[in-house]
Image (tube, helix red, strand yellow):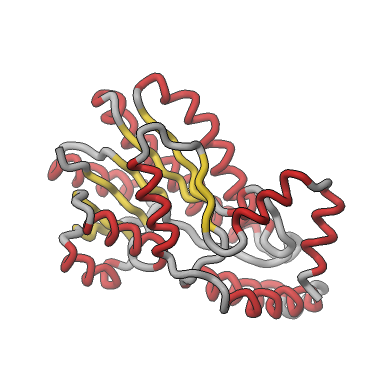
Length: 270
């Protein structure tokens, strides 16, 4: 039986690469995003573009209902939609902070709530949540983004224990640096929010460090391959890490003290 997959954030980056890769490998793929005009090329791969604003409950409900009506089921949900709202915690407005969590956390979890009943009924399903190395490591100037990804890690751990009894797997993907629009959006946000505040010096150092790393990051297909590997594993791991410096950074974080890791992190921002 052909499995039906819903990939959110499919208009660019990891989401688009994942939708294409899975479609090329025989899955029935729905690619969802706000910017439907950026998904028209996906039709050539047999992917069905669908409008989705994860911050709008009517949009989320309509998206899931349309797929259930057309395909009868969603076997795999890839919660990829997200962005990075950057700026010093002192500078970021509560409105922007709430929107960051609305997109990265509540949107993903609402979609998950809507697909789980049918997965339970079918005694099969895979929920793939895109976290980040930033879901285990928090750098300065990205506090609210990291909060959203730390939340995804915790929610995934709790859900994994809840739904395993129904034959459903919950998988966390932890990308490191990857080529996408994400970086440009994060830096633009950072400069706008904190570029001229008391944190300006740190912002300049962060931007310099970010640009230096940007040339080394791999294409999003690296993470798409990781997602494919995770959903095709008979007994998937709880977490898969990939992309620039992902595994080394997570390893260092696991063995070093907080203060030692702080020193290493800040040494990159000079």
